[in-house]
Amino acid sequence: MLDDLKQIHERDAQDALGVAEKQWQQLEQTYQASFSPQADISNVVVAGMGGSALAADLAKIWPSLSVPTEVVRDYDIPGYIGKNTLFVASSYSGNTEETLSALEAAEKKEAQIAVVAAGGKLAEIANQKSYAFFQLKSDMQPRMAVFSNLAALVQLFSQAGLVGQESQQELKDAAQWLSEQTKKWVPTVPESENEAKKIAQELMGKSVVIYSGQKLYPVAYKWKININENAKHIAWCNRYPELNHNEMIGWTEQPVQKPYAVVELRSALEHARVQKRFEVTERMLSGRRPAPIVVEPKGDSLLSQLLWSVVLGDFVSIYLALLNGVNPTPVELVEKFKLALNE
Image (cartoon, rainbow, N blue to C red):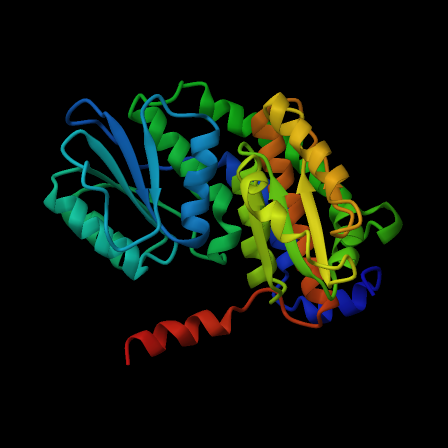
């Protein structure tokens, strides 16, 4: 089915595959916003949910900020926030209630504020209060705007003096490389030569578990949320070395024929002990869990491996949606849930 272009176009009516193919272009975006610190910045807090928070998770790994950084997925904020905190309110829609609540609390603590959004209430607040406003394009699903959000954060952190000035250029250089890599996963490449299609076939009908080391954990989480939202398919994720202290034991009483699929994102850039944990875990759990689908990210830098792995996962989740017979773009249950919360 995944080589039948007619069926693909029928099921992918809003061209999610086309959006995934062009994601690299988001990394080249620059924004009109300008942020000037009003006091020395001692820590960074980014408030966001879903894909908006995920961009901040990626930014914590690369380009690695010079001050402590926390991503908040909640209504409340950490008690340490104050005048020396750079607080970033990030919501693609601009209307995420958790983020708006966190912003209000950060304002009371007199934090230095920046906003990343496509519009909504956050845009109104940013314009009214003259906050640095990094305005995203408004024609995407939030989960497919992660690279736009990442580009905005890197520009903001560069302006704040928290990452090197070269980071923005590194992102743009990586975009060109990624554009070539992405061509390997487009619909016209047959399944026999298309890694994304092959993985999607292996995940079909299975509950998906994605494992990674610490460096690629934001990618593992991105795979999880995209499989959830695009494929309408259950998935979980965890990371080494933590899972060796608990979750690993959970496989010991699960017959191998249970309907699970295990994906492992194995980077040679992870700590040497983490790499050994992958190998030892696979050996010890042989016959107790399904053999893992091993993904070895391409690229000679952490940035390139992060980006490559994100886009591969996006294609996998969309192809899995098509195999499941669902449109990958709408997330109707989320919208219904938001309405129910306000009843």
